[in-house]
Image (tube, rainbow, N blue to C red; front, top):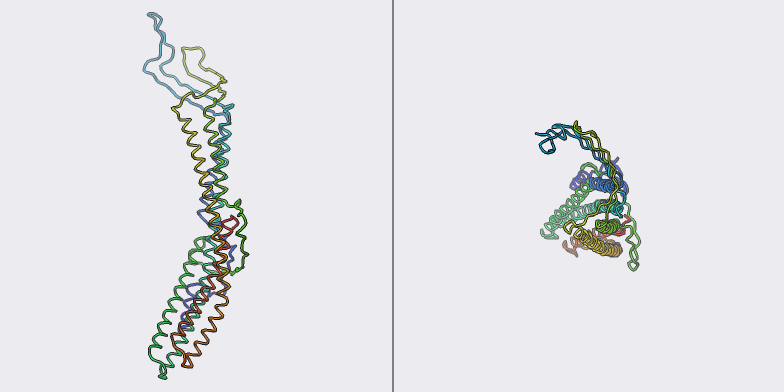
Length: 421
């Protein structure tokens, strides 16, 4: 009866008891996460914003057209004096219109540098988006294999409950025969309760794992499915070779930022150079006192700033400092990625070693439990030895399952470090 209750609790918490449960693969979870992530959708707006900055920078190559119109009412009209004669030169109230077309013909590379910087910033935003996608995929991998590992732990914990319950019955029978003391029976009952607590803890791991995986994939919190076990033994990477970090999106993003800083320095230096421009103007003023009310004018000119309070020098220093800052950030990121890669490779190596050790230890643990249980039934062993043997077997199986899935996660971390996940 107790075993049936445990199985029912397992089915209720995991939701895998339905015969028609959906089967999910890791690739399907990754696809759903990429399509539903609000964080990724937000970063696509960053890319779009950076793209529009290119259009803003490019607009300096096109003419600027300004139109101004209005109506002026003066207290007294403007007038000139010729001795004692006063002659009005304009009406007291008049409408006016001004149309100006201004075009920069040449600015010594200022617009080109601004446009190149905007383009590189757009590239950096795209690479950052890819980096966020890789981070999301790694979280999905952790959640996916976390659920699979928790399901295996539930199986091991459930087996322990069954074994401890059987041992409790044996202790009960021997106690009733007067062969063992009540201490053996109490010890067995306590161990059964402890095994059930471990089972419920493992069930809770599955439940929390599904909540997190559903959040990542955009599924309802109550959604459950059968996860396909895609257990592979990935080959160990060569730790002696120089890692290829060219596909790591974050490094590419910072490299684009550094190149953009180079163009920012060029743009700041171009403030010292003049600007050649063309201007066409139309000025209309309704004035009954003059003959020509509409004035047309065209100008070809050159303008240069002679002094701006040392702002130009400050902008150059600022651009140089920004470039130096981003160069240091890029070098630091490269070192951190190499550390991340080395750590993941070490974890893969250790997980493989743990896996091989645990495979043999499980068989030894099962044999040890069988011998210990037989000895107890023959009244030459103790209840403590039986409980210790079962605990050891459960721990060994737990270590094995965790090694299996730790290996998969470590392999994903290696791919994440190299930007290939």
